[in-house]
Amino acid sequence: MPAISYFHKKVSHTHFIRMPMHNSFASPTITRNLTLNNHRYLLSGLDLISLVEEFGAPLYVYDAATIKQQYERLTRAFSGLEHQIKYACKALTNITILRFLRSIGSGLDTVSINELRIGMRAGFDARDIVFTPNNVSFEEIQQAIELGAQLNLDNLPMLERLGQVYGSSVPVCIRINPHIMAGGNEKISTGHVNSKFGISITQLDEVVQVVQRYRLDVAGLHMHTGSEIVDTDIFLQGARILLDAGRQFPSLRFFDFGGGFKVPYSSGDTETNIEELGTRLTELCHEEMRHRGQPFYACFEPGKYLVSEAGLLLVKANVIKRTPATTFVGVDSGLNHLLRPMFYKAHHDITNLSNPYGVLQRYAVAGYICETDTFAWDRPLHEVRQGDILAFHNAGAYGIMMASNYNSRPRPAEVFLFDGKAYLIRRRETLDDILSTHIIPDICMETCTV
Ligand code: LLP
Image (cartoon, rainbow, N blue to C red; front, top):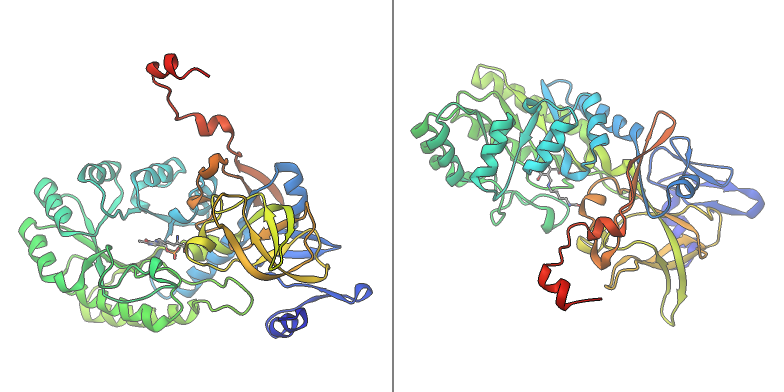
């Protein structure tokens, strides 16, 4: 497709920044607080290329203002309901980000004992943390109980074990699988009949039997049917099933409707209409409260919704390589830093920060890992030159958290933009970090001399 069609396709959604002297346009970006000022891209007022000069590339950058805007939009949407936001910290677990979220009123959703411990080190009260593990040992569950987190169990054997050991003394939330296919792709769909998550809604009778046998204190019911759920009808379908199931448990204090709200990944991309969802779910919950004759509160566990759009991954173009078929931009990053494009075929917008008004050309953007780690095929970008800095958008959620040391590459540094300043919140890894867990047994000291 020629470059001009790209303009036509995109112009209906967003505003281009026009530079009459070059008769050229800077492409729009999806990252909300990103502005283009005098050929320089600023995120919440801070110059991104200067950040790379100061902290190096590749670099994860997170914008506090975006996280706060998303948090406030969500709480506004659900303001008709007594509710708690439990940030799903698997999306981005940096301790400074957690402290920030705590400061604006969030609780936490955790999946492992270490996430729970990091949350507590960030200053969260254990009572504001829900522990939603899957396939962990009973010992790990016991550790979470000792720390005082809200337990959320998703299988019958562990529920039974909880009853045997603790009886009614530990309030428990139960994760129900409502058998709904929801979410952006099958890898991130968690509430369907073949999913490993939750207790099947068809096994509700067995849940009730275990609860009665041990007089369990069922504090809440939970569902999380997938990530990137656009359709409010699907969300409500799950909520109705959960509320209905709740009628079996008179002691319930809350319903946890999980996370999974979709954010846009490019201009004009779909997103959950969170205000519509808020209105409809509030109505549904009030109806159910009237039926129950007592109030309950709601919990939500957004990950992507709070942090995806707040993050950029900044990388450097090492090589521009033309083949008979393609022009590759080879960057100093790869599937070891941002796995989503390769693992889910996820689309991440890319901006050439160094050449905002360059002529648009089509590129494949590929990493430096010894795998086919292509971030994007056939992507229009403003002309990329060796040394240019590119930004991957929507890199705040499941970016660095899914990073690895593959090819013995260190993980990038992370920088947090807060109140007009940039703070290093995680240093770049070094070779020593990578080697720090390696052990050379004595026998090899003798035989494998270097
Ligand atoms: N609650 C539970 C129980 C979850 O398992 C998850 C995500 C969330 C909340 C938050 O979902 P979110 O609001 O972020 O969609 N790595 C994948 C996403 C996996 C989500 C796993 N569970 C990705 O990069 O798309």
